[in-house]
Amino acid sequence: MTTVGDQEVDVMYGLRNVLSKIEGAVARRSKDLPQISPRLVAVSKIKPPAVIIQAYEAGQRDFGENYVNELAEKASNPDILGKCKDIKWHFIGHLQNNKINKLLGSPGLFMVETVDSEKLADNLNKQWPKYRKEEEKLKVMVQVNTSAEEAKNGVPPSEATSLVEHVLKQCPNLEFIGLMTIGIYDYDMANGPNPDFITLAKCRQELCEKLNMDIKNIELSMGMSTDYEHAIEQGATTVRVGSVIFGARPPKPN
Image (cartoon, rainbow, N blue to C red; front, side):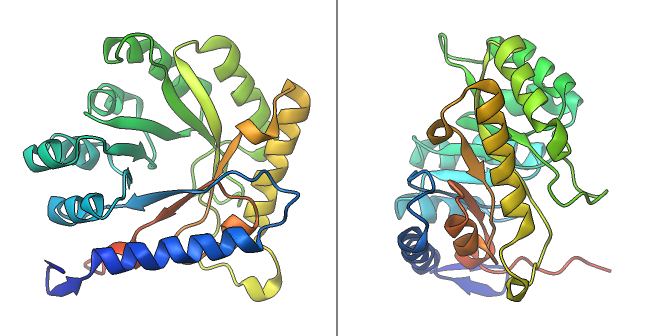
């Protein structure tokens, strides 16, 4: 049990609960979908190193951060460096070109899930050799704005395949892993399957057909604390879950 602010949080219980629900969602998933075991990314935004270490000691390895400065600070934290040797950091926020070097220099960086332009892909490709070990490529996902909301980042679904093709052909230092979306918050599933998840799956189908890729090798990062089970049922291979593991984030000040 860890106290965060005025809140006591049982991170181990939260993790066990989420992993159990992931297992149930996998069992309900259509056998027609690629049977890729889902990866849980624990979103540790604004949470202190102590709870990250607690989650790591409970077996969690993949952690996600929305802001470069916060990821860089946590990744370089002496306690995390000492106690979490195999931690894998996923960057899941909007990446500005002027923050690329700070992000790439962060210990344990595993994947950038939010590549949303050729320019960003080119800059990551150019800068990564300064930081990589031997011939290791930087794992990336292409972010798709499936909900067409102006406040959301990502390429329109119609442009996803061309950006993926650019990464594959023009960015030899990058390893394309899959597609990612944020989608509409608080979608009411009484209205049927989440259209954002359906759209991302269609983008994957399209790029596989046009670029002659095996669908089993293309991941889908979609689903968060409120809808990760549904996302897995719709084919998610990565879910990004925070509050149900680490406790609710404090409300933003007025």
